[in-house]
Image 1 (cartoon, rainbow, N blue to C red):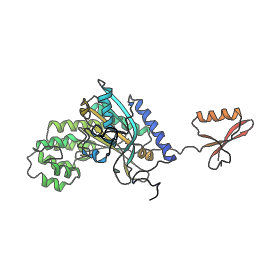
Image 2 (cartoon, one colour; image 1 turned 90 degrees about the vertical axis):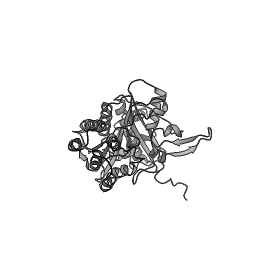
Image 3 (spheres, one colour; image 1 turned 60 degrees about the vertical axis):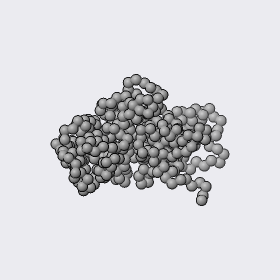
Image 4 (cartoon, rainbow, N blue to C red; image 1 turned 30 degrees about the vertical axis):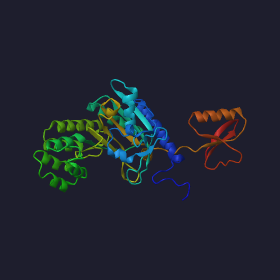
Length: 385
């Protein structure tokens, strides 16, 4: 085996892409800061029990684990940053009221999520702690959409869901509503929109929960029409009514700038999220629909750290966003001669202050593909290729 090979789904980020990703990271962090979100930088590795607290088994399977030779305890390499930010909010900051935090950094996963994906994701996101109302979810959704707009990602489509719909209906039917116990098969069938299997699995359930669960796979589409159909079809349970109300608020927050759909059978992240969920998609240059950001409410994530605070937030994949964003190629580097001339030194300093990349030529360094600083008329000028 060649020594320079990398593991499957792990790759280097080369200069052109790295420049786009770094520029985008700066744009997004400035965008978050302008809305009061403070940057935190959790470590890449920490003790496993805190890294996986409250996240469900899905993140456990994605987490690389090893033994710490100093303590003998199990360590995990983070596969997602959100649990770490929850720990910082609950245990280190310990602030009263609302806390707004953001982050950016690499996460490492045991497997890639989706075809052509990477196991090392450059993740950026924002989290809001300490406020349990739908107004906090609305703030997060609006900031996600404005951040994608600032990043130059166009043609957005938002899907809104809420785990409370299934939970309330399952419990009304006498099921646990956990998706893991007596309702495990039903949960999978609904998640996969397998209407025939849902029909079979609900045959012995009481009404009105039976009819409502059977209706869920078909309750998806444009927000206004689908929510109206859901209100007409589903029973007036408190949990269902609250979920539909929250979905309506989030759909209204996005309507007018993007296409908004709701999906009453969207159970992705069910074992992690506790309320409204949302996912943003965009078209890539080949016409494919790409997942470019997701999030939702996950109250209680800090319980193990001593503070079961309300929480809502989102995360983005920086490399995926950089591939979707409208961005121009950086200007070619400027090559300057190695001459002891104060005027040349001043010209180089001025160009760098304007954001240009200027290289002072080494002996024999070629100028192909670069602009050059040349002397003309008693001054130094950039000569374009």
